[in-house]
Image (cartoon, rainbow, N blue to C red; front, side, top):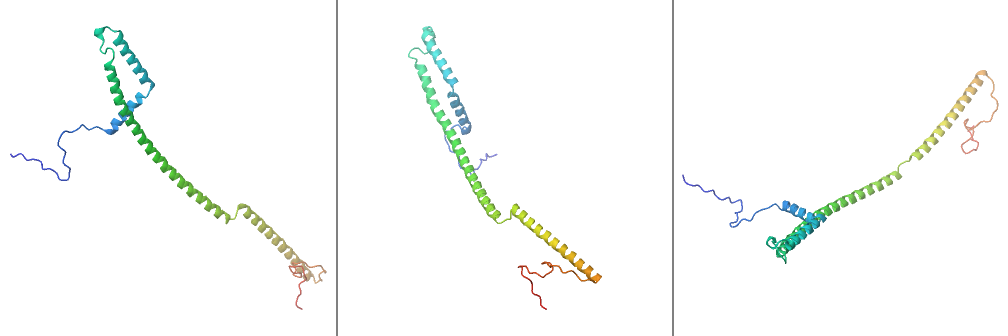
Length: 205
């Protein structure tokens, strides 16, 4: 059976030939670098490092010559500290860059929220102004109370006048039934002999 080779796909880019570098997760590496930078920025790291260097000096100075692994001038210690400084600086810069990115995202979010709050405040201010203008054309509670009180007084006065007029008409009807002549009495505005301006009303004869 012939060996069938897999045909290359034209919808995918060709994989580069050569040495493949190891891939890593930038996010995980960033969190790891932030953890190291955060640990190096504490007082515990300085205390522990001072203790290690003091022990290093003491061992390589006071210990027997055949047990000293880094005699004076402490070349190996200098190399270790140089390597530490060489790796610490990029890790701290990487942590600072990630923090700057987070601060920029947070600042943009705060700016967006501030813009939304400003728009909402302007909208509410316009609505309040519109309500004030509308309330200027609406009758208030005190105005309604005063109008209702005045209307009630007018209704009471009209009711009293109607009662007085009905009472006078009943008295006149009783006098006509008895055949007697009515007594001369001054007539008021309810009898119609006085006009509204106080002058006597002229009747046609």
